[in-house]
Length: 312
Image (cartoon, rainbow, N blue to C red; front, side):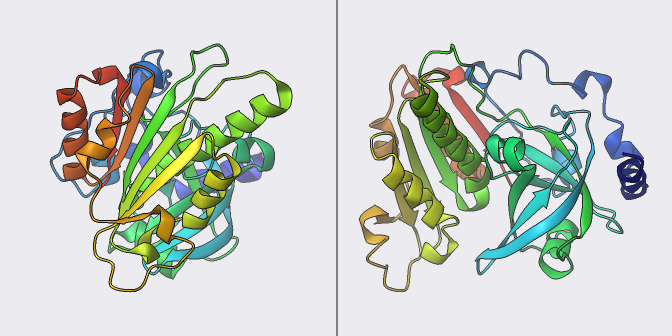
């Protein structure tokens, strides 16, 4: 424990203003701990700094040491990381993000977790997928990060799915654009875990159906497509997906073709899934999240059934 505390103390030097958030935001409150009654709303004004964009967003108190134990290229522009977080006080809800503190980098990163909370509970691992940009934390991940690199992480965010065992079954519609797939993949993976647990134990939360709409420039930028299709094939009665590409220039593989639509996700596709039992989670560029959240409201979906997050 002493070693971990020393590591975190060293990593956080220079981050005093970032770590000392308001007392009111230091713990998850009852209004944000239940996603079924919360709509996440962020301003559309572009801000490049993660801490500035999320200054008013709830964060957990625990800042935990983490070690990089795996890395891979998910696409030409996206690198995935697997982090070991040994601190058992560190936990998250499916859909949340982390503050990412890097030694020697003054800027704090903000990245959505794309793994299920069950992976952390069982193996003390979390997974991230980070797009290449000129932002210092992303540059570090793509150019300098190595196996056994040490960082510190803290969970935040009011966009999550965390049903309790006695909650009524809900259908989920997940709408993702680009790297906005990350928190939605966490929710999708967690939903699959909940379904497995109920099937094996005969108890626990009963998930409804899940439909993923996911848009990217081309098939090479559709992240985690194999994992997504594996879940569709494992639970055909529960999980379905519609993968969209907007600028495809090469032939689409036979394996992917049944799931691919060329062109953007449309309002008509989403309208077909509106019901009283359905929750909508949207994550992507601000114009996309604004469009679909507004269209859902116009179609009389209650605001508390629309959860969205914008990533710049």
